[in-house]
Length: 128
Image (tube, rainbow, N blue to C red; front, side, top):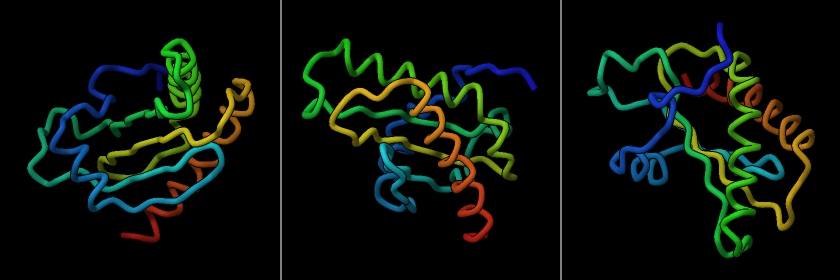
């Protein structure tokens, strides 16, 4: 499996984002709050192989767009390199919300994201 992050892996449909925040399950693993749910049944058959993720960094905590973008890039890269640990059947919608008050180094973000992916795989198996 190639370590890529394609456009179909980004969660950008407003309807799915609202549904994820309203009906999705969640857990907290510093520095991320992770929301997840199975994709709705009426989804395109073309995208079924890919989980879709959304990365959010709050403007309230990081006023400068440069800082928000840096954290999003670090999180996206950590996900891209470690997404093979999330080998669950079906398609998931996942939101990562960065909750720390300061900018953490990439290595720490990667370690925490890896732990969250493993926990997410356990949570999905439990919810099935």
